[in-house]
Length: 150
Length: 301
Image (cartoon, rainbow over all chains, first blue to last red):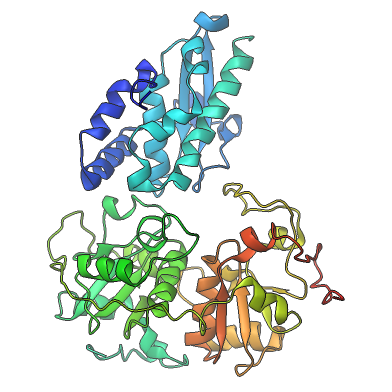
């Protein structure tokens, strides 16, 4: 089974976009993701202590989730905060936000951490740096499971 | 040396002032034949957000490490990287980067393993350049044209690089741990806010003295003055320039910064960077460690 067929639907389009590009353009796309990371909504911007740090990332990043509803069918919302000087980390967060924000909690929980290795990024950012994205996903899933009462 | 050294008075107090350039000197010399500016950062995308005009990027993960063996690239790999970066053996290379030049110093140390003749650091790095409002660009204009024929050089590790056996047999001699105090004492095995990189035990190499690398950097990212550096490494530690000295951290990157300080700013004659560092020593079979804030004793063998 190739890595492509194992991709959850939420990541298919993003993976295709990255794989369609060569090395330098792939980095450029990651940079565009990092620039598109939404600002924190006011209720969190004013209360950074509510966000959970992700120590697996080289640069500081904080995240928080919300669920709308209960159980696996609830809607997952994701929010991130990372400084502009950490574009790689911001790019990882923006990919997760685009793929998973607004999906059901069940879909997010079924996303394997290995998805981070299937996007074609290892060659351009190095596998060690990708550990940061997997670390974010683990924390997102744990928060969502608790908040959805699973 | 293809391009004369920066004559700025501020640099002349250091042992090897030709290893540093000031931001003003670099701005005045951008575009000079025989000069290549290289950015080397912790964040692999920072260069893409804007860099010094004409600078090329060298990334430690992707360009300097061998992908299979825990080692640096070999002579062929380094020659390929130099050719792609437009660097010949005669080129004056000026390195700069984020985090007080921490990664740029690491790259400089790898250049030194290959004996590249003229490689310098931009004092203050990326942050100083930006703080002074100097030009940054995302354009490729001014980047050097790739060259060919950089010689395949067999790396000469011995004078600059220490391995675990070297450390084990010289325990009790001048040895500096440049990690954070919490890593040194064993409270934690990774940098505050940084990833856990898989070290089983916390602590330090017995007899190592603790001097976190950032003590050598001022608030603005530039190196501290010669007098301030002498006060730390010679007076506080009592280390002598002629004595063989070893520095280490977690994987050898932060200690490359201290290696630069001791070798080029203070003129220590024999400093080696133990790049295996804590990720090797802390996990190593039959290797002794010390826990707590004291250096500890050489273990009986």
